[in-house]
Amino acid sequence: MMSADTDSDENSEEDSDDVCPCERESHSDLGPIADDERIARIVRSIHLNKKGALKINLFSEKDLTQQGGSFNRLNHEDGDSAVARAKKTLEQSNHQYHGLAISTAENVRKLHIDDKRAACVVDSEIKDMPPYDDNPFHGDIWGVDGLPAEDIEQLRNELLALFSVEILRD
Image 1 (cartoon, rainbow, N blue to C red):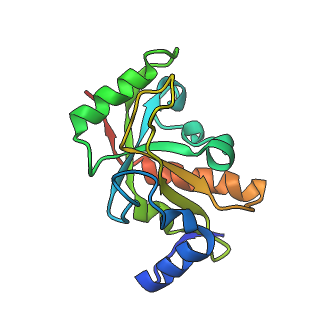
Image 2 (spheres, helix red, strand yellow; image 1 turned 60 degrees about the vertical axis):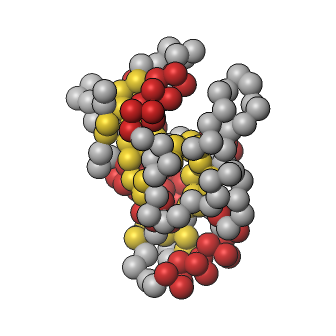
Image 3 (tube, rainbow, N blue to C red; image 1 turned 135 degrees about the vertical axis):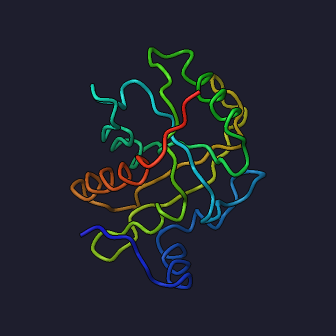
């Protein structure tokens, strides 16, 4: 069963060391992502149902197991810049920008399945990776290694709930 961990920071650090060692290493000039950082996922037209509510495809299985669920670090980039970056990212696709779904790194790190940590939050700056523009604010959410398919599906639903709190539009 999925739950938010309410244990102390010490246990949270142990969890990170055991299943998410990549969180301790810096992959960008901004350094590892702190628990209190606000993280924003781009909401595209395909992420909304007919009533305008977020759909589970905000986080695909592929995002969580093969390529990382991209987000931007809002503690380091102001809202206007984040919106402009999101719109530019979508310029070459057939999807419209609809906003940014926002949560915190801590909320994602607290997700557990069967009392085990379910997701990692990693800084992953994009630099010199054409056709993508450089993005020092980029990060990824990953399901922990070895999660079975049914747990990935549960993780997707829990992430959706965390990121449905706030959507910024211009």
